[in-house]
Image (cartoon, rainbow, N blue to C red):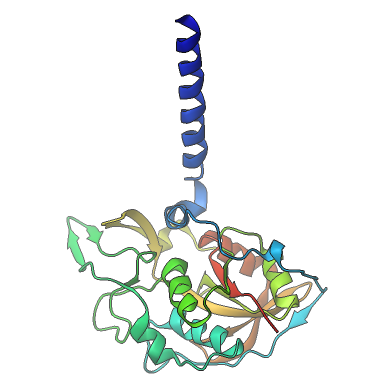
Length: 258
């Protein structure tokens, strides 16, 4: 009898130890995106490790530039996705993607200084077409889901990875869709606010932005910016990486069959 109790205690210890590991990540700047990333429980269908990759010292891809304005004031995510998909050979425009992206239908409400709204990893939050109504944007999970409809079995979710993986992808002809902020550097804490959503709390910033990373070298990262209409815009590499990390290391690309 004693041995069974001992075995049970060991089992419980291991069980809660595993829970402790899963809960450890909620700290520092990435708290808001930990809540985003934890919804992604499945392994990506394709991993970059499964693709034979080489990494160059520098690389730059000729990705078509598409501007979100004037039709989509909050549509940077779907506009960036249209650039990625068009580069992959898919004929699709930003307006079709704007119509098809999953939406979180939660209505905006503010009570006692607290905002109640949708979760951007459940679907697009708010009004994409106008600043006249409340809104924010969408994170990587619904974007990946939509991208899979156009490139079934070929989308790689790189969320949570290292920037070096992004460089490997670009080296091998695969640009990367990411979530960053419009300043392309670490934001101070006052730029964030906490929302209550049906999926739990999430810390958001109204400076959230999405671009397509098209290249890199030793000092800079290059990207197509759907908001400013700049092609292969360059930003200091470490600043760019820091902003991407703060927003949860969200990134997707596609498996290049060519």
